[in-house]
Structure formats: structure tokens, C-alpha cells
Image (cartoon, rainbow, N blue to C red; front, side, top):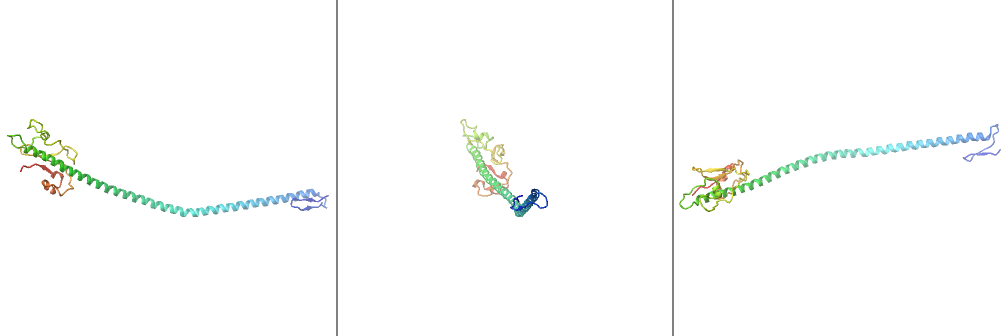
Length: 224
């Protein structure tokens, strides 16, 4: 009987004990294959273990790198929150200052307009008083409408082109100064606020420097 040749190159001679050489060869070959498979499975298991260990180590490295980053982000988030609060506070202060600034500008412009309108009404009262028709005595107008159209003359004669509203109150609520005969000799604002302007008034209104309220700004014509 010819010797059998295995896959690894070994030769098997015919058995002297009576067992067929083919059976012996099959048993040996099966054992060899089982061993190879066991080694392969062992190798695969080791590879899986090494792969798992690598993945675990990689994850641990990622965690170690991530923890300082998270701490930094939390710290940065805290600083960002404080920065937002400071920004809101600064904007609030700036808006308050801007509102005060513009309120002051608007009030000063209204004071200028009050001086102009009051002076116009006073000048109209003066024109009515100083220019009576021939043969009539000088006197103050009995009503505001008489300044817009003087009824003493047959033709249209105006001492005031139009009636002005109080620029501080925005309405036609002037306080009227009356003479002893119930005629209009002047007007004044009903606004009780404190004036910003305390000096540099026109010469006819020097008394306004001592005013503590706009009601002290009296536009009254007094004959000289």
C-alpha cells in the first residue's frame, strides 16, 4: 500500500497493527484540522480582545480629552452669562441717560416756544390797548377773540394772527390775568413744573429768573 500524504506534507506508511492506513490518516487529518480551527478561533478571540481593549483605551482617551473641554465650556458659559448681564446693564444705563438727555432737550425747546408764544399774546394785548379808535379810551380786550379780530373797527383788524396753545400742556388752557374791569391783561402757563431756564431772559422778562414754576412766567402787559 502506498503511503498517504497529508496536507502538511507528512507521509503515513501502512499500519502494521491491522488498522487501515486510511482510517488512521482520517483521524490524524481531522485532529489536525480541529487543532487548526481551535488556533484560528483562539487567534480571533485574541484579536477581538485586543480590538476591545483598543476601543476601550481610545474611549478613555476621548473622555480624558473631553473632560477639560467640558470644564472650559462650562467656565466659558459662566463668563458669557456674566458678560450678557453686564451688557444689558450698560445698555439700560445708556438708554436711561439718553432718555434724560432728550427729555431735557425737548423741555428746553418747549421753554423757548413758551417764551415766544407768551410774548406774541402780550404784544397783541398791547396793540389792542394802545390803538383804540378815535375818541375811545384805551382799555384791555374783553375776550380773546377780540385779539383775532378787533370789533371796534368796521374793517378787519387783527392784533394776533392765530391763537396759540400752551406748548407745555399742549392745550388751550392758559391761565388768564384779568384787570379790575374783567378785561384780559395777560396770560400764564398752567404747568407747575420747575423751569430749566434760570437766566439770560429778554429784558422784559428778567423777573422770570426767580421763578420756581412755569406758572410764575406771566406775560402781562402793563402800560407805561
